[in-house]
Length: 265
Image (cartoon, helix red, strand yellow):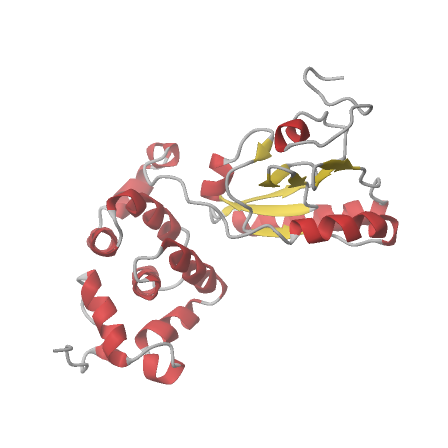
């Protein structure tokens, strides 16, 4: 038994610290203070998990968007609940921040539970607990080791567009949140990056949670955030005056669709 591991004969209640001390071969999960046995997965269950992880990583790693992990990595819900999702996806920042033995601060961007007849009984217990996984935690700081390894990233951030984005961040986010906001905006690497990032920033109104939500929307289809930010009349996202005010707060030129909008008196 590994040093500090939890004996199978010990009675609960158990805590997160007990859960992370379980041996690698101990598949119990922490459900309301009890260590619940998880049934051994079937061949096809493991095949589906492997395929999902493969496809997610094939998309995410080249884009430096994050990493997908398979069963076995522990996630803390609260002091008496912890689970090992079949598949979980962490952003690049979240992966770097995650502990070696488990994620005890923040939550995955995505968790997947593969249902199968052999695990149906355990799934009825585990899935409600996993439903408590909430909004992802904060994003790590902007100045990281990856910048030192990739001078091109630093150079990109010194372009006029990057400088304008940095100044816009400083206008709407307080000092302790600026690095986190910049890291979120760095996640977008699709079409029209400066325009889309400014739209995401305008839609967030200086709120980190909103910024993350808008970034997820941009990664799915960047045209949605442009529609909401630049065409508020059509999208019903807000008034034209409010949209224009948000761009003015960033200190950047108004998009063409908003340039005829008068300032509020």
